[in-house]
Length: 151
Image 1 (spheres, rainbow, N blue to C red):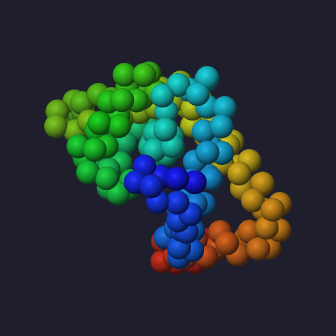
Image 2 (image 1 turned 30 degrees about the vertical axis):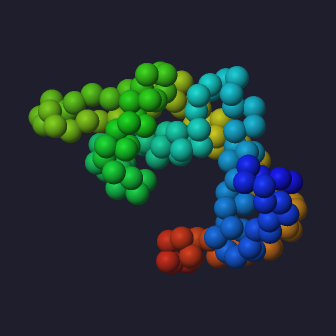
């Protein structure tokens, strides 16, 4: 393999950041497999945001905090989803500064697609690692990511 600057044969260090990056890349590929035709233009980040929106809707501020994003960044994602018919938003009657976001029917379909894709990935990975090892892997991710044991 030759890169633009002429270097070849570069080794990727097998530290945790790279390993998690590889796993996340594989997860993204598997989630997006087959998604372009029914849900064109959506990235994994869009599916994640759609999945965070509860059926009754949520405020941009709350979604941004939950997603670990700025309000402006999340607002741009919402605008993108709205333009494509996956979400809708409206200002609250009592406080016009507050923007409430809801999934549309098309957004619900995209969310169901992503959840089914994730379930398939989890099943595949459990088969690859074995049920017990995969359960331990999920438990470790939960503890490391949230700082507490899984419920």
